[in-house]
Image (cartoon, rainbow, N blue to C red; front, side, top):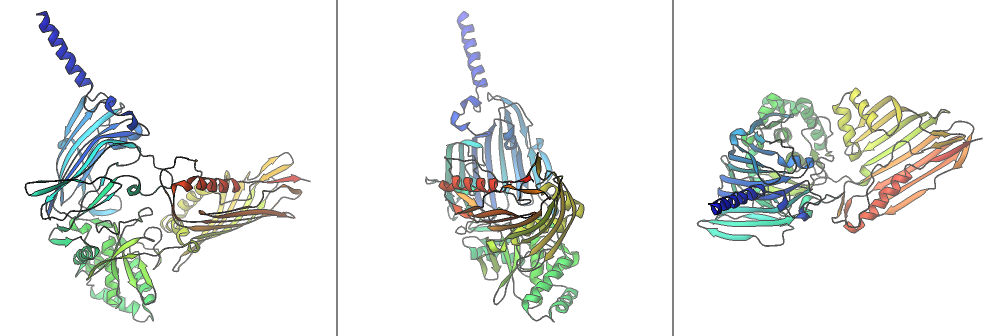
Length: 634
């Protein structure tokens, strides 16, 4: 009897130990995976099955341990669905630090939300979302989801690490496809070969990785593909609704895109008459394009519409003419139709838009685009048109779509082209300041600044999209004065191939100078001070990517209060290196102070070993921009 009791006690103790140290217990995580991590992926298994060109099934099972509140965003489950993409099932589990299950949910327990954002008129996308809202750290969430897609146009991407500050115990990607199907993929930073097997009438190809420490994203580091393991996939044959296509090369993908817009370029009679009324009397195609683009801007507006295949297919030009709105596809097709009526050829062009979205993998044809613009080639030039913007001038793209590869489409298919690059001399901020410093240290400034090219982009949107009151609020946030008042401001725009905005400001800054006894301390650089400071890093891992190149020029002339003379002036500074050029100087003549500053900032790709030189460059500029003049009273 005693022996039986002893056995039962041992058995109870065994199950208690197991329950208290479950599969996802935090104490099972290797300590090396906790460094710099806010969360740890315990397992992430993705399986993508291509049943045929019109049907795929995605299954994803993952568990993530959340270590602190900074990792909470990884605990949120979110999947979209629409007409073509159906969520079949969802299961979710919550575990405590010991790996003990606390809660279980099914698909019916998730929130069902609209996928329509603020700028979208119509969209059939919806979202299944769930959050356990658990705040006792550490904890673990686990989800399994199965998604059926009535199309094979979109393939998932496998990133071994989903983001920075998250480590990975085990992750895998499995592609299952018919024996006759041509699977297309490209690997980045994957050293091994994929595991390949055959079961019945299907190939199975698998990529996997384990024990990946958290990545700390370094300043100016390259894109994610370059610093971690990624595999991208693309279809060969595919189908969506009744449209079939092939993505083996860019030409064939372009044929599919053209088929979606074919026959949608017919205009109503009143719009045809308007086209000829506007264009027929003009002497060049360039003038006709500019005039018809202005007609587009004056008579339509952008609204996002993503219904079914409408997320890919433009609305008919007649419908845009009638409703006077459309998304990027519809408005671009409408502009194409206007130019066609005027006898001017143009090309519907797919592009990856966004300030930090310049890169596509050119040697891997696949769906890497999120926007559509129009290309109108002339005999000696090419005019690019952003058809969703009602204020930008014809021919200017800006940081949103400039300097990147795009897919130009016509009836013969697709062809990769390059959008315009705005060079250093295109992107200039030239500022002239005249000021007067009062005895009480108040500085009155009259500033005139000319912004060109990419330097005027943000300003263009600000003055065209916001009220004068809001513009003044933003100016109050941006200017680097302790206490000041903007007495007046004005903006004038000059249209051209490279646009210009002229800014005039009248500012009063109290206590601009520091008065100490008989001395007056002044920073001669009144308005253009470098703000970036980097920390030195002898163990820098990743290369350096610097964005667009530009020039800043400042000329400052300040009337000084009477009775002061110069006691100390900053030495002239001149720096020249691979990242740019910087110079500044100051002099005092009679009762005036003159300051001149010029900075040329280069763009480009630099090795990680150059990082500390960049740190020193930025540090020297930061220091020079804040150097002071010391005046003493006679």
